Image (cartoon, rainbow, N blue to C red):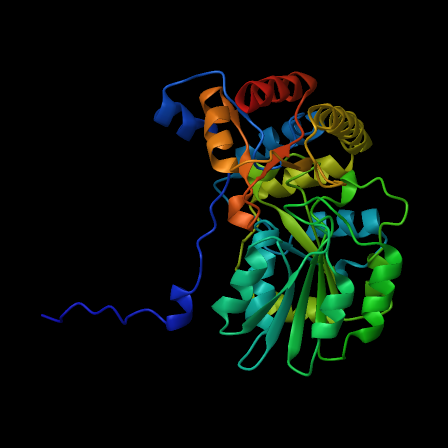
Length: 366
């Protein structure tokens, strides 16, 4: 019998930190034995999907015995029209997470380096570590990407730069002029990944337009998703926009049938309902204004968010606050996992959810 060994796994795998999602409602019900729980932890759209998407998904269920269209042919062409690009500029994934993984596998090799902000979305770190690459964490400045410091960190080994815009977990953005300056410094062997999962929520007039960079043939990949404003998080469907050559490389590592048929149907129908984006943007804007006004009243500092969540400083260890909120049936996200031990990240909910969160927070902070 072969003796068990602890050296079966590659050393870099041991350096990976598994992703820890926001607590599901069902888990809190099991752990605490309570009902009437609201989840404001994972930046989901509380209004739900478009009625057109729900109808299309019900129809698609009739054919789930068949494999989906592996090329996302129809969705790709609808999305190309939506953004004014060519189908060859697009790739779809089982969420943007899968595309981040593909980007790492495709473009990183021995000696390559990755640059990211700190704090930012944790999956960028995983893409580097998984491929045995050095990841440079550049501290945020006032909870915002410090692009000048990122520029100064670029060297001959830099292969990928990840820019989450708006950033997760802070909700802050970098502006067009900052991106223009960064792109002037990026060497030919480097790819800049603009992760714009919250793109549709942004209201700032100087938010960067990155698709023109793709059309110019630059080494950029723009990531967007149907999980947030389109409220299809449970179906896992994200997409990338890049010049055709970059897309062709990513297609070589893409898993077959990685986007299911129900997700494709829901995404196509979502694009045909302009009210889906408009109503979610309006509700989010009103909710953000309400939460920020309440934080001002309570004397709690917060990051200037352009996303569908707000990072707020509760001025004490956030973990006990998080646990007390759980007891009141309100799920949020602790900032300690991002190196922000006194901060909570709260998703903007419906008006009643927002009011309930503020009431619970006031009770906890007394």
